[in-house]
Length: 226
Image (cartoon, rainbow, N blue to C red):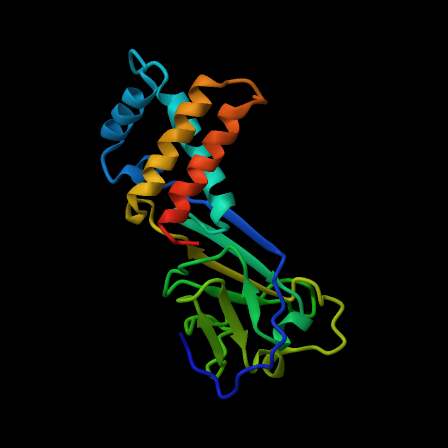
């Protein structure tokens, strides 16, 4: 977190240009165990007779995490995040809905030059485009995270630029470590994996599906992480 001399007014734009990609960390780390142990746990849960469906179980676990992530609107597990900030959005705090626990250090910031290409990282003192007196603030100990640049436009802004969209590109790593999630999340993931394993049609209508979704939501809400 870096300090700034001033704090913006009550207008908080929500940045909509956010691209999120899950890293290569195995989803089985959710169970805070080796992959073999996690797969054995899932096999036991779905009553699989051997390990022939292990790859399928990993696919279902990925899908379960995606579903749980959509419920909480938070990143579960490590993700790379790319945020494109428009020129006008830089005048106020930028609300990063769905982004939590930004890794620090590690954020990079680049702006569009007059030729339309991005600069080097302006936060890295080893780069030619480094701005030594740039003032910015990252608040990620609340949800959603906020980012505010105090004087970026004063340093590099082109008032008549034709590249007002996606003027600044931020890249960072964010998300809650899977192994640190409470046991309710692990149980919810097992419920979903079991459902996907036994209900392989694209759509299943009926009370079982509704009860499953409600059960998953109750488990996750009891942890009070969202």
